Image (cartoon, rainbow, N blue to C red; front, side, top):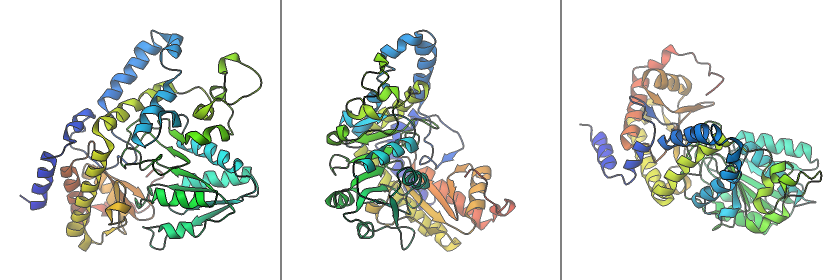
Length: 418
């Protein structure tokens, strides 16, 4: 037996999270390395959604609003708060990540009048940059400054700090980079921005559920994150937002919806924002999709984020070793930090034929990673269900596709959805 396969099997045998694999829908013959894009379905989610559809909607009908639906955004937010180091009344589930980002960015800029600068990064998820551009168009007089990486892998804290000054209103970064998995020093950069009087807005979409996050511990101001990646909340699941408790009354959402009104069922014609983080609600919550989030969150709470993060580190370390030993001589380069303290829960690799390799892996090898232009394949690790054997066999599949040139039958042009 290959010694590295033997090591993988031994690591799986001693994995403290091994039992959680049985909590997810099984896909025989498939190696899924894309949990950083869409998490696998928890079996419990099926039961929850069935109950919401059959009993709560089908039988109880509108009575269900008073039996848990109305407070679902707060109840789910309180659970997610435990995963990201926040207080129960600082997190709420609502809308999409993009809408939440927009709401918090506008609220932050309006809370810092007279300051014109928004500092972000070229590593940020492009949707966040688009939203900032839209916000700057909506609120004229603001300039967006993007910190740039010298190697397209790392972005040192001092590079970001060099753009912060007394004119900075907002610093917003992706805690874990979607492409390289670079992990920012949240504590240091939050403190640096606050020292200049600026607010901070963190995107936790590639961190929540895989990285140990302590928003209160670093005194973070604001944060958003999605629920369909490591939280396994389902495709297009509603997202969450965080507002530190002492900031809540000073910030107002730019979207004034009836669920964010102080007394929505008074149906008054004048808007008064609700107390606390509830003011960032807007329209009626999508109960069917929102309910599905709870299963994955509960599993992560049962596992414990420290244990989840420890396994993630061990698995990315093992993956890097495999890439170095089996793929480096085949033109594959690692496009993620090698320092585990600077790395999230996925590894990006580069190859000139990345798109076609990705196609061959999915269609012929039963391995699902994902592709990011121009030449990146991301290998995502979700510790609750990714095994060490999955990682070994995924790398072996890449080696076979390259050495046997199985990618050559696929077109060089990437598809619209990657």
